[in-house]
Image (cartoon, rainbow, N blue to C red; front, side, top):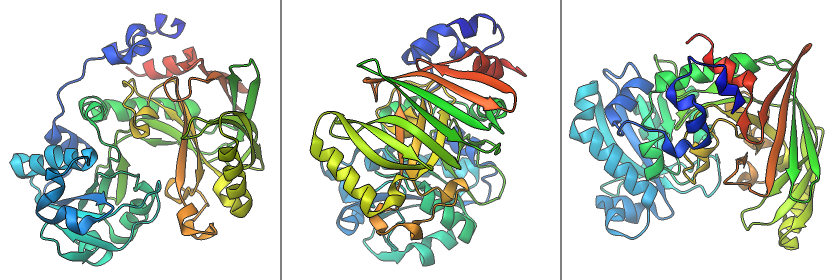
Length: 405
């Protein structure tokens, strides 16, 4: 990559060989004490707990019955690496207490509000609002679906800190959660400063048939925000781990961008006034496109663009968007609620509760091989910069990462 040639002060993980082959990056072993101590400093005197999710929580959490069942990989990782780690000396080392494990009912949607009921390992039913949120300083939510938005709202209400780690798998444990979060935070801040107060971003998407779709997002000169993993101090906040992202809440959007649906169907989405208004089939199942169009017609808020994000880390593909959207050279859009990002789209604005999700649409080589990000451009006053080309960070971003080192 040309960008790295003029940046001799870059750390090894930003060298061309590693950027092009992030699976070659060497990571330290996962260390729960280092992770929690770095992310949540200070920890002394904090009471901590872990939340996991199941369709039938009362049957599976009692006596940790899920450990003896097939499946439940995320929840088993939560028990092995976090619950056992806390009780194996990490709590004592960090001056924390508690360490209880609770289960809530799976939301089956990204960032949907959680049901109130929660169960402990003795099978007793408790209340999140009454028994959990007011009584813990640190809450670790290791779940199937993201709970960042609802927990952010509850953290502000009840005053706790915490982290969401949905989709936790072995790759994430050994890479995205094994890194130095002081360095992650510093890199995210360097790229935040390179993008902040942008007036607009344009993204060119190249399809396999040669067509180029362009999406324009108006940002209005707003301050860029960052997901950087640090939740230091005592201020209520929720970290999204793995972290490493710079993001905006668009105030306008128009144009087109491609979409790969869960069943592999490919479509073109038309955007007007910040909202997706229709989907058109490229290839795959027409019924999938029809279903999306019916949903847009029935509840137009589901098509509202609530986020534009850029990855800031060099990480291997994990198969889980929580890590893969943090990879440098990727970008993502999100539809739906954005109140946890400082936006104005609230759950109450949707026709149905199950529609009030925050759903990321990630563009990355492994996730959307049918679409190439031909170019991403930023306009900031008279300044025009290329940010990404063909899923690779530009010289401008690489020089920003090298600044101050």
